[in-house]
Length: 622
Image 1 (cartoon, rainbow, N blue to C red):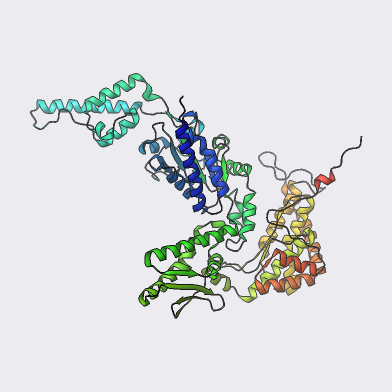
Image 2 (tube, rainbow, N blue to C red):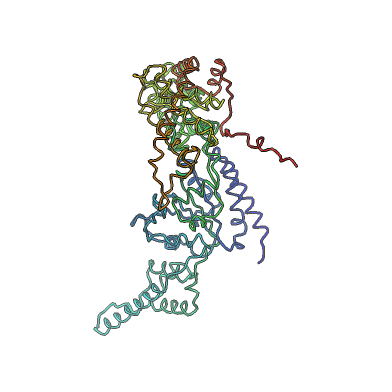
């Protein structure tokens, strides 16, 4: 094979330009962009040497820009005419096609030349139900064939035979009509566009579809017969030069996405947790939806989107505001200055780390663009060319200085409005509850929780105490049970038994689950050493452990009440401070703990609390 080094160098330059353009457009995913371009480099530079397709998997939560990244990559590489998006589905009638092969044929990329195929929302094409039973479906089954070796079997024999028989039948009809003396009988009818398109794909003809459509039916019959004699028409279609990109959301891997208050969790904390998701986590999540041999066909190139950091969201907001300013200047010749208070307002009401960037764009329209249009109308009527916009958090209004005129629009962010709707008494109750968790966490682990909240953007009042990652040991499981129980017990200590709320329900569920696993699954109770969670012929009578579970949780509740009572002053002040602000950072919590003699340290997001096993394993004596 002759290598065109000049062409390779030109393509290298296009790749680097693409890298730069993608990083300019997308915020916070530079590493993902680098990995993606590195993996596809051989496909783009020298696709001729590939014997099977490159398969790249993109995983992340909704709204992180997976599909948009692929589309912009296609545009930068100038592959728009060699690109197709396919969303696989089990539902009949959900698309024009029932097989991958037909979709590729219909889009003209079954000719063995380089192309890009995006299989989006792949989690919807699960082949296993949640209980592990197979999903019954006959659609898109050749998807797995494509992933296996890049070759799709041709299923054209019956189609070609049909065309031959159909054309011969039409010729007989023409002959009969002529014998009956009918006039205007076309003895050599042409193919027609639709049939020409199908036969061009099946026979891999080189001519233009318009030229093929003008061929007579008998000429095409001869073409089909020649193709059948050569046998090549029956060979599998080789897609080894096709770049296959698979994209999806895996709730099992990104479990935190559905477990926390979406708009109130700190973006950096969420980023640190999603950053720890590994290839193994992805494959484990896939194994719950696909059979083992299918999981293997996804390959090992898995790019995992971590959620954006706080600075990424801030950069995105700033980038979009700059775009709005530039557009306004270009269209209306009006200069707009946006105060940083608007950035803060958009962040507070538009950043949902779990949902990616889409809510930010929506909030920019709601907060800035809608109100800017009103200010712009006034400026144009007054023939003023400058608008200065800021937000007054005290008065809850957006201000615009237009020449010597001050325009004021009352405005409360949609999320701020929800946060402020919670009753004061409810916030106080939640503050005590969450402070109970926090005090137990500080005393038992010596750590300040990453985030402490009692005022959330939710229609249901609530809060959370965000912990670090805890390595599960016998001792740490006991500590976690106490921390879960501490919220409800703190309410009893501060408000009295009769005023304790039902907000403890989730905590007690979690505490009970840990206690059950402690005894039934892990064998940490000396009286029950067998595994009581086995099923399918190996099950044991779990009721035998129920009394022990109850006794354990009761003991933990008593010990936790004693712990909180001995640190009641700390609990009182932490509750007071949290009720006043609705939110406390780790450093603020630690300062209060240290004030009351509890040695507390602040560890960053992603810290793992694990025993010093390395120090405990000593070198053997010789």
